[in-house]
Image (tube, rainbow, N blue to C red; front, side, top):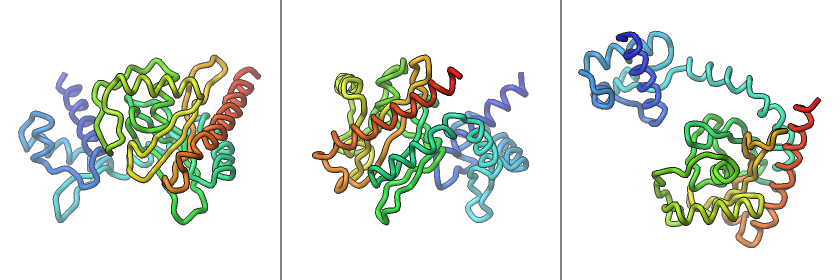
Length: 248
């Protein structure tokens, strides 16, 4: 049981490190884990010894190590959806001029597993491996609307436009299902609009979502329907490809 508890605490440390850009100190780790500082230090040092964490020699704070990157790449290369979606992501960039993204449901959030950047000097990118909320992103709303994922109990506010209650979110999800695409109208990041649509497998089960993101000045409110139609069309083509591949 002691080994299992240590493993659980080690995994908790990795989760904590993934949520910060500035690293986490031993005191913070000890408080989060509910252990003394010497125990937290031993756990962190063990993770560092195997490359899963790194300690800054100046600040003494821990961040994720290079071994995490290697494992992440290994997982991504084993995702057939990513390979199948790549040409469709490129098509979205060609047809809209904006960056395109592919995401799946993971841990109650939208996990970005691929993207294709636009050629514009002013563009909106999101790193592969990023987790974003479901209630205020276009990809997230689509994943919520077309799956059995429960509505989030907590809905943090990021901008004045962020949806913060379940009743309003339900209305947005119903609209998303009705029109076939979801919209993020500066709800997650001010000055950024996004449009996304679902990707289905041969069973009709949503397996991901693809979409575009760009400056609100280029993706104007008067162009949302136009962009939505393009994204929905490309997502249907990708869904057809997945259905054909699965059936053959």
